[in-house]
Image (cartoon, rainbow, N blue to C red; front, top):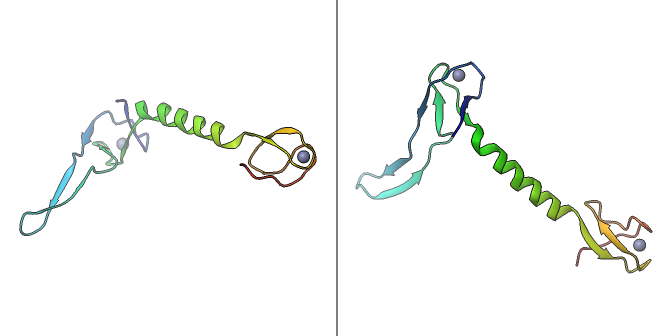
Amino acid sequence: MFLVCSRRCGGKLFRALFAEVELDSSGAYQDHRLTQPGCVCLNCGAPALDLSEVPAEIEAEAAEDAAATVTDVLCPVCETMVQLDSNMECPNCGSPLEVA
Ligand SMILES: [Zn+2]
Ligand SMILES: [Zn+2]
């Protein structure tokens, strides 16, 4: 965990907001949620960011993008194996293609 103030105010102290449990009047369990973001800056009250979690998220997104955007497809028009990107047409002959 590496917290910074989202306003970059320079504050070094943060207060953790813990998971809240909501009860109705009979005491029955209604909802359980983790207050987001998890911490606030004690200096200015802005939400704190946990920078230690960011690189993993960015890597996961990049991996998803790479998997989703390039697909090998055999074009039925020019019969060429092409790598299809997000514009969904054959880069060789320009025919519209579908990912099988
Ligand atoms: Zn702050
Ligand atoms: Zn083609």
